[in-house]
Length: 386
Image 1 (tube, rainbow, N blue to C red):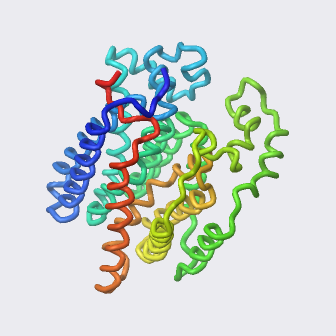
Image 2: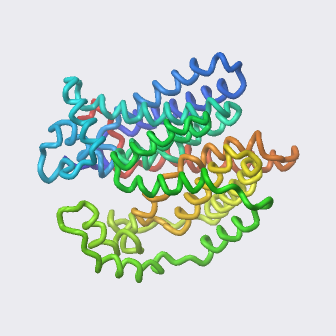
């Protein structure tokens, strides 16, 4: 059973999509502006609706069916289910099967643990929620619906950051230890996390970071990875080891040969000058004011590091699949940093209004309105469309 762009009813999908964006905005407003004692009321509303609407999506991405069969067959479906599951993921699959619950419940759980981990971060910085909560969905939706096991592991990276905020080092390292036991590439996420939490910000101004972004945006060529991919192809770590396939096919994963448009057999649609300008401005503003919002707070400096690294990787990646997946390991910090900068970064009234208008164009039009006229590549299916 494979995904299909014709799955489901677009009207139902769009209705639930708009409903979820509206509810997350409302709950973000409640968390930001109501008394802290109401946090859990709004968090539960946001968590329940996000978990159900996202968790009940059917065949929502290329990886969905494999993860479905992991649960459905208890990892006993050769050629489809994961034949080399990581220990904690394997334990989870076996434990879930013991409950006797329908397979679709596991996907509700995946969505629930992700949004709950993110909400616990917002609990520490509630003023950011009005922006950070709906933008989290708008920015990560395409990835969370597809790379399901990676985002299950990312949930534990989020829990690790919550523990970091609360100075619970043992819990932080425990959560970090869970990450590669679910997804092997989690070692990369852990390395970035430890770097971000150990290295204090040595700069008072964001100019170096803006310079790196300018270079990545205007001058980087993804095919510069060609030599690196050829080197990887010469490495042999054993045919039975899951990473060997990535080494053999490294040209696809690291160069323009791995373009999602190429893989799907589609031509990349030309972007308008307005959309290119808006996206470029959004990244510049996010880096500049995000830096100002985070630089003087040791607890927030990791947010900037992780968000910046993700933005740079996404910029050089274009639409190369594996590089985008690497950027996803810390992409969750981008919406959080956007939320932080609107209340924590120094802006005068006029600058704040201009920034607000640019972000409104980006997220109201390009992330919301365009979603209403562009069908998801894997269709609009929900559980009842099986």
